[in-house]
Image (cartoon, helix red, strand yellow):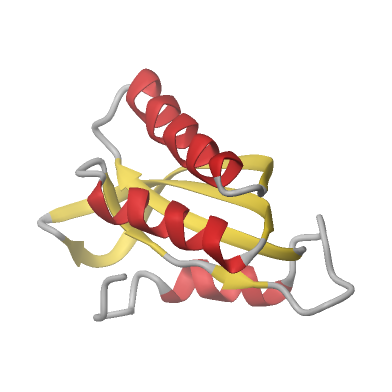
Length: 119
């Protein structure tokens, strides 16, 4: 089993129920492929360095998961299809690192504002 972190940026105008619904769908997708969704950190609303999809702020969430690549691919598919998600990135943590927020994930979350290629 591999460990992953998935930083997600939601539309900031969403209600808490809409965000919870998407996170539940992602968790179900991971579970259906034999993975285990882990801790969910809600970072809250943050202002973007520049506009992203004609918005100036987003709601950040960090989802941790454990599983095989198939489970994470399914989570990526669900997030790609969700209209509520502005951007997300799947980060595979190095072996031996788990449940500890790595500096790499923090950098990736910050870099998502500057990333032109949307996943």
